[in-house]
Image (tube, rainbow, N blue to C red):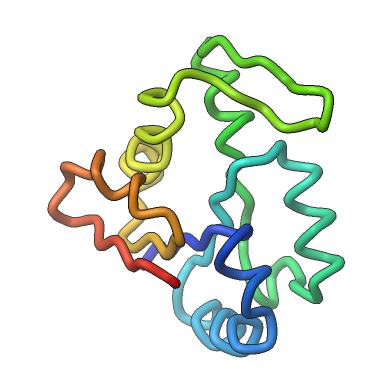
Length: 127
């Protein structure tokens, strides 16, 4: 099973609970971190929060990097954050999950779920 977790609002919000869960899940599943910022930022923030590659997760997928690879127009603001059109942004995780055959997505933003049309993808809302 391929299981994806958002970092901001999910893993970074509850690191003690999720580190244990991810370590267990990662023994029999593929755990993917699917989050907005560029790859290196996600990697650095995971490390700072105590998450380790191959112990807690197998790989990272960046929404920003994926959108750029699809030639979606992105702008970077002075604070370092990236933006694009709302539909491109909010539909991105559903498309990434479809491309990567992800079975389950844990995220704190319900807006992503509005674009999930694949009945095999289970969206888990984390408050």
